[in-house]
Image (cartoon, rainbow, N blue to C red):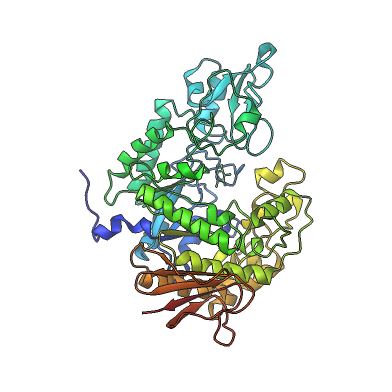
Length: 551
Ligand code: NOJ
């Protein structure tokens, strides 16, 4: 028997289908106690900011107890708050404040792996071979004499072997850092415990879940093992990969859907699933998680053909699933969009690839044209916010923050960087937000900042942008406010505007026009609602988007 929360309407059940969701990386958002690490009371203190921004929901990256071997994606306890970030009471206060401001709350669930300090893993280490405790993890006998060698040659995504020895001839598997042992999802207790975790947060009023590595839970570890070179290609279209995107994973999500549907409105979930595009729909199935991240826009260049193809593919997904698709320009795992779009590209090069190579390299940064990058990032967000479906905004992108590509090696925290002598990893997009133009950690908190902010961040501070109608923050605020008025119905029609202009129309005569070419172009006749940059003699210049009301 479910109860209907006061004020719930039929519309509320589908809130997520068109929501704008702001991703908070809690340790880098706002620090209320001055210890240099963002926290939940810090988020509570900034609810007014989020409300003024106009987002429908926030997604919080993990805030659970963690040794931070992977930024909190190594979870010690799924049903508590890291003491450095607050308490469960602080969570309740924060959720209540967000809800009072009309903002939904999405939390991150990390089911593929625990941390190596999780009580289950400590028990598995201590209990020894053949124990019940070892069944909760992916543990195999080693090869060679006395199991001294790893079971096979599979590699971790963060580098090195995917196997770590337990000291008695057995080895545990980890897709990510060695501090992140993979769970065995064939184990009924693992399944039951995660359902308990989902209910724990849903009962606390959480509106939805972002599911980390949703495509990784089920593995086929039957022998003989396929050699690494065969399993390294992860995006298979036929579900035949032993480690990723196996069909059986959807049995788990059907069980989760039953839990979500115990609530009214049903709880929502979005899958982080890096799968072949043809298989994404399975995660977005209404009988499963219901929505899946579409990362294609994050991979796209600022290029008309890329944008159009990406939008068409995203909308085609919707035809299959009956869900809605998601759009995003960045997240805590990707070089910031304002930098990506300003990278110099040689013929045939892709921005995302160049950005990653740079962050993988020895620190020699390419000459980034930040003014161009920001101009394009502003144009791009107006495209994303004009699309049907749901848009995710990564914290700081509304300020136009660039990637911090030159963090000193000793400051780096990301295991991708820590495990490597050359790679810089993902810390450059996780530097704490600048709130004020001066002061310790630029208003992030009263103390320091767990990752150093460059002096240039002061110019991007909320304080510097708030009163400026031309700022990126003002653009986001205006766009989000307008979108909530204009976004009526899922239809999108392409308008043929030639080889350099992306022109699309939404119901009610809402046109979104982007000039990808070098020369200014004419705008459609109508009322100009918003532009990402100044017009030139009434015409739309290069790298600029306009929203126009044509009826
Ligand atoms: C995806 C998360 O977004 C990323 O930050 C993390 O490192 C991996 N999953 C492992 O949990």
